[in-house]
Length: 216
Image 1 (cartoon, one colour):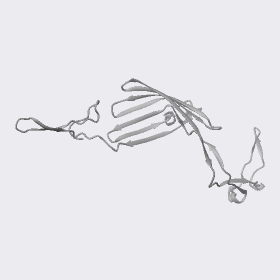
Image 2 (cartoon, rainbow, N blue to C red; image 1 turned 60 degrees about the vertical axis):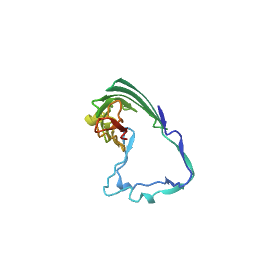
Image 3 (cartoon, helix red, strand yellow; image 1 turned 90 degrees about the vertical axis):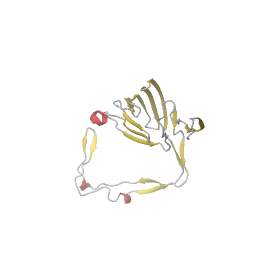
Image 4 (tube, rainbow, N blue to C red; image 1 turned 180 degrees about the horizontal axis):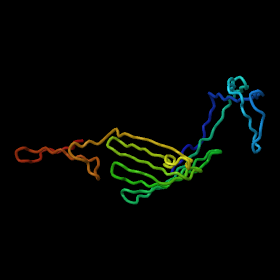
């Protein structure tokens, strides 16, 4: 479990806030008479070469406010649990809650991770993201001696059937191992991944060991 962005940020200097205050009168010859559609007023523009925003900076009075202020950070709470079914398969439950005025929402996911081999693994499952309930996350990770490469989507449905999807996202990542193990004699074993056999120097005449020292 983890909590991110707990607290607020205070601004006390280098402020430059602008407030627009004023009215803009639309020329009567540029619009059609107001009509209603189910109680909603509709104004239609009838002059194509007329722009309402040609000189918007001159239409309103600008008021500057340089007083100090603060803003609450979007508090995010993560909680998860993972269970290893066997050496190749594991399942995970993850919950994320984001709390901020007017946009607080909760997300939940249930995923399974399967190691196809020592180099390749795939993850998939089901997730609820806010008010979006049709989400199938899928991710693939490749592990090699130089590092790892990750590619995934938060919702496979958005790629296959966009019309029924409310959420879409694609993520990509990679990391590189700066310090790699070197084994010039033989491959490292699974239980001793960084072990390297000692070099043995023998007497040429009778085969006796006269010196043994680690290579690294």
